[in-house]
Length: 131
View 1 (cartoon, rainbow, N blue to C red):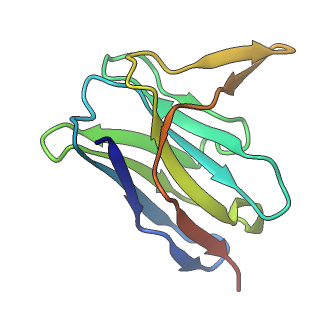
View 2 (spheres, helix red, strand yellow):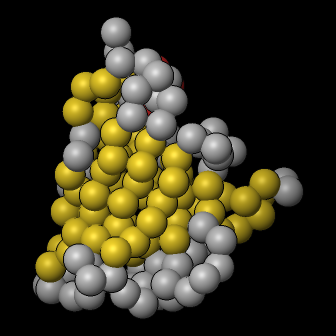
View 3 (tube, rainbow, N blue to C red):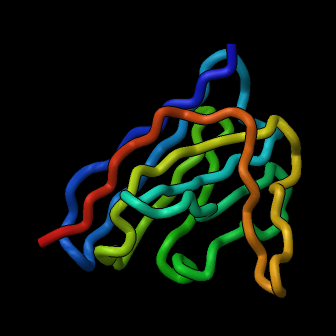
């Protein structure tokens, strides 16, 4: 059974940092593409970042570019999302997901790359940015 588990969420002040982790049971994250998504109250789900197993550049939504970094530790079967310079708009439940495919499902929508939804999801971890 494919299970993804997120951890690392919490309350952080604006300008602060957090590192989220995504681990898996029932399968190995490598060589699959792993995505991070978030959903704020009353808003649609947003694809935040995605990483492939190859050396290709990760995907980042424009809203997090320069502030978030995705990485993977194959030995620990874990994908991380390092978040810096957090703002209130980053408050959301963060999910990791995978299609168990090797490529990140990024599609161009009006010239902007958008990360599409994936098949397997964790239960999420809440990130609250507030003073």
